[in-house]
Amino acid sequence: MRFVRFVHPAGAAFGVVEGEQGAPLDALTVAEIEGHPFGEITFTGQRWALNDVRLLSPILPSKVVGVAGNYPAIAAEIGQSELTTPRIFLKPSTTVIGPNDAVRLPVDSKNTIHEVELAVVIGARGARNVKHDRALDSVFGYTVANDITAFDQLKSDGHFTRAKSHDSFCPIGPWIDTDFRPDGQELSCEVDGEMRQRDSIKSMTHDIATLISYVSHIMTLLPGDVLLTGTPQGTSALAGGNIMRATVEGIGTLVNPVVEKAAA
View 1 (spheres, rainbow, N blue to C red):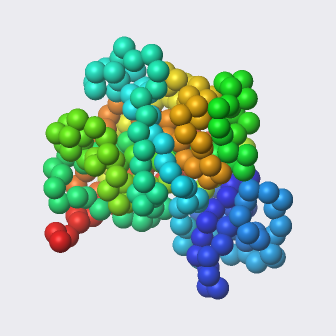
View 2 (cartoon, rainbow, N blue to C red):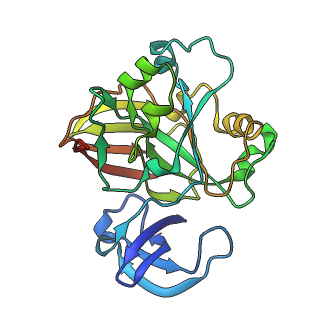
């Protein structure tokens, strides 16, 4: 199933996207469900054309956990090629936005970059001290993410916190696909129609089970938490007016515009 969170004329709800995988958006519908998607699915009977509703971020995580340098070429660029364990960081929940929401460039950054990533959404059981061979049991589904980073702030600060934490710095969507199985699919990012990033998720240094197990031995992953699995090379600076299209083959495309943030 493909789960979305959306706004319809009567309010906001979770729903299931109906239609063929890869079909144009105007051929898809969304069927509202009761409550949240972590449990038995009950449909309300309400249904809308997907183009007639506004998609929100498909989940509101308590935290987003990222992994730096999980693709070899990027690891070499940032001097992490010799790390044998994942290097993780946190993004606050306030970074999360949905499809077509604007990424706002900080006024104090001159080099804010895009980073397309396959994102893992943790399911109802959560994940705490899970073994590698059971780690995938904790997965609810997968979605597309764009780990926006003020790269000049990362370099000047020497750590990830400020560079990764600005409001709007974690677009995710357009939906959570519970049937997706990572197996070498391509991920890519276009900016204004120009391909900037493209690689296979098979290129990841640490696989998804390794990442979940590693993180779960440090912190409890709660239902709905999001784990970002790393980005391939090709990241580039963004400017106001850009349109980003982050895609994971077999899931879909996450589109977000970029705007200049007004000075306070």
